[in-house]
Image 1 (cartoon, rainbow, N blue to C red):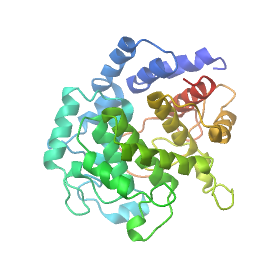
Image 2 (cartoon, helix red, strand yellow):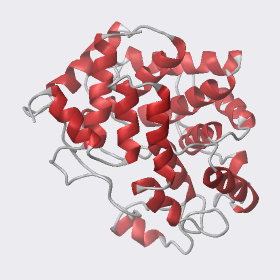
Image 3 (cartoon, one colour):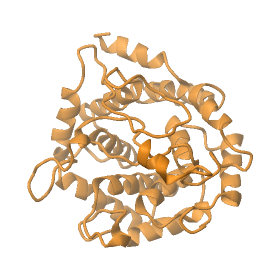
Image 4 (cartoon, rainbow, N blue to C red):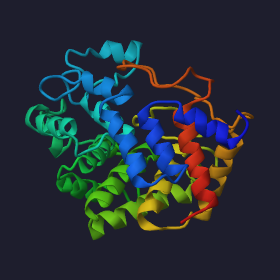
Length: 323
């Protein structure tokens, strides 16, 4: 698998959720072709498996952020669980489930009627209090056609002085974090794609981008050292976690919406992604988050990863041939 065509064939020999994105982002297939493949997400493979896990009330695992009956000793001993509604919806969005499909519309409506955040019983589509959670809720809601403008307004008002966000703001943090910022940015971008955004949300999104760009996507502004070595390792699914590949894929998606050229301050992160490509043209899964899942979607840690290879390949393709 040393030729680009062989890597693409390997990616296509996969789940519909990967195939349609390969067709769109790496092969420039006409929209009717990749849309037909995207429609298969609802009926086949990982998308169908995850939809089959949905509860009768529209939730997953009986809870908004946590499974029903979850006890915190599991988080301490095993890891954070990833089966509840918020993470399942985000996964379906990543798969590309058609928001106009009957299953998607039904889930969104039932979640609005039945799901409440564990924090204080807030209705699901009104959001919680934590910026990471609300950023993902905005992304999912905007993608699936929900009016999340009230949550967007709160996130805009919760931006910190350095331009980004931190989910510990309510506990006194005055400095932004990479992870909170990317979660909010992805939400604001999805909101902008769905609605055009507002002047305030667009300005906030640009300031969050600047927060990351000033730090070359992974460095401390104060010392220039990596803020976290794991930012340079690639995982999937990211859930709320940050790495430079996730950030680069965000900037690629933002450029597709706005037509912006790649910022030179992305160069170092792009070169890091390029340097991680293996001799066979793939990228490996460096690590995986512990915790309860519905099912695994990629190979073992250290093995070639289709998800990471897809994301890395389309980032490099965009960076070489910007719109």
